[in-house]
Length: 397
Image 1 (cartoon, helix red, strand yellow):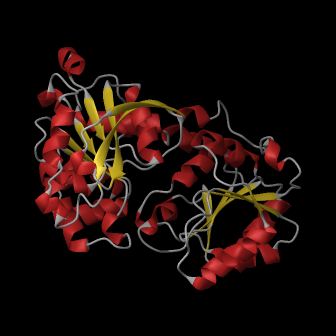
Image 2 (cartoon, rainbow, N blue to C red; image 1 turned 120 degrees about the vertical axis):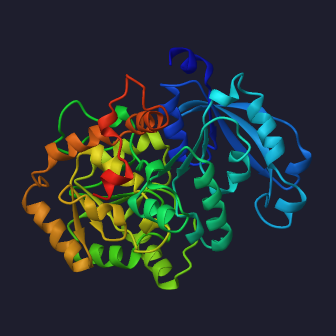
Image 3 (cartoon, rainbow, N blue to C red; image 1 turned 180 degrees about the horizontal axis):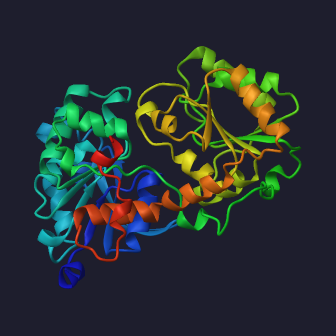
């Protein structure tokens, strides 16, 4: 086992999303890894360059390479298959490919996974076919192929696991559920009972503060947020995240425009800065709309708020959060949101679950997720707490 560990070199394909970067960084503390980052190019099929990019937050070395725009769509995928050139790149980065795991983060890499000589891990972080513009039949066919070739399949939610088993024919024995997480460094040494200091750009914001973190786009219920703001005039509302994505629903879009005039929007922050904002609020609000693919995924912002320790109020727009009560309070309407906010205000924003959130946050880190994946691939590892891996059998009871 020791010799095998020295020879293997994990390939992570790819680290385009922030959660894949965070996962890869955590895995890099345990294993020798190569992180691939595609750059979509209009003439990518004619380009052979490859360059090292060093990220600073997190500190991660990546290999950027050109990928043809539309590489997974017909007729480009038929006329100009990308998998052979990509396999050559991967093989050049490891001396022992048969012993080196390949992590694939999207179904579109199925042709690569089928050609990889070592163990394959399918890390499923989205219900991909539910995205607008996707071909559901194509995605399902690719998911079937990925599940067939993978030694381990790691969806980040129970609902995605059920889809893979029921629709893609994945063996339940292959599945280990790996939810999203937060950095281990964000977890406090002891429970937090009071909010943290306000960052400099919101020092003038009067308390109490209700905070909303994340992508401030169409997966948020802006109509509910607007109504809640109207009904809680004594609260300041802080919004941290980008607002650049278009909201197709006109009523929701109009509601966001109204909210932008009422609340404090500080724009997008680096992932490593989010924790300061999560800690400073009196109460965290997770106002999701119930829509796919959000509903079936895993809420990154929940784990950020979990480690911050502040009380949370969420809508039922995320299936994962339905299992997180009482760490989070669930509401359906603006009136219920108002009641929950006022109740917390009356309790000085102490709901009695601070210690429980702290205990849960210790298990909700990217470092724990990386260990769980490694243990799923190499269960004989002696330095991993195997009891913390969430297998499908455990999750489905």
